[in-house]
Length: 133
Length: 147
Image 1 (tube, each protein chain N blue to C red):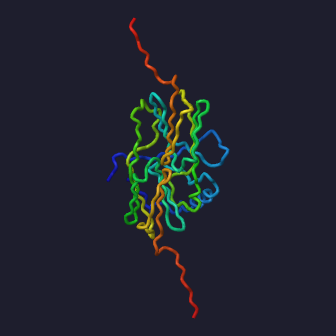
Image 2: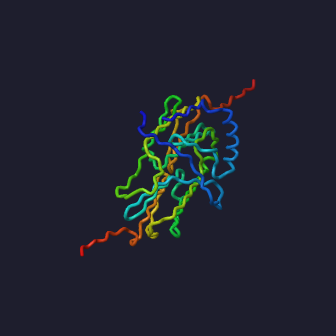
Image 3: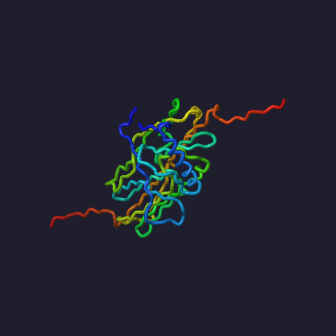
């Protein structure tokens, strides 16, 4: 059976520019961001990160996501062939939309972080009735 | 279908980089395994431990039920499908970076492994397949008798 569409894996990009206080390498997680009238939704691929090791922060319209990988399982293992690197995840976004930070929801499912960022009432699009004079 | 053939791996280069990576690996909490490549999905790392071989693959967003792990002869195949969770009411994407679709990968394993007794588990989007050594490949103590 040959799949119709083959997925390819991109090389993980290391986070550049900032240096963390904790040692270890940080990678940029792949994200999808989509928008509707009420909210922005974000998904970030962070395989190996469990819900207790993920942090979502919103400050001054800057959304920061950090995921720490538990690498202790690798202590007993000797690599013989490797295709990807293991490390933590870090990414920052500046939000254009006015987000209601009291209603942000985030959850972790199968190594994917899902964040829902509801828009503030005044930031929602409003249709203005056009009247004939 | 992407296939890694165990024999294809350059033994000399791997032995040299292996030792370096191994040293770095144990020092660095971030775990360095050398450059990661562009290639087939899911990316797979192969390890060895005392019990046998361990294959670890990154499958974020894929449920345990959606992954099929098959062993046949000396070939280990990981297949399944990664589905996009599409919100019905979205007005548009700002970013679409995550890959989706069907996948199938086969790994040719070395001899002396017992694929029939392999076990697989998924945790936090990471698939771990443990393949124990065959009985015949395990070290055995031979009792010494005095006469």
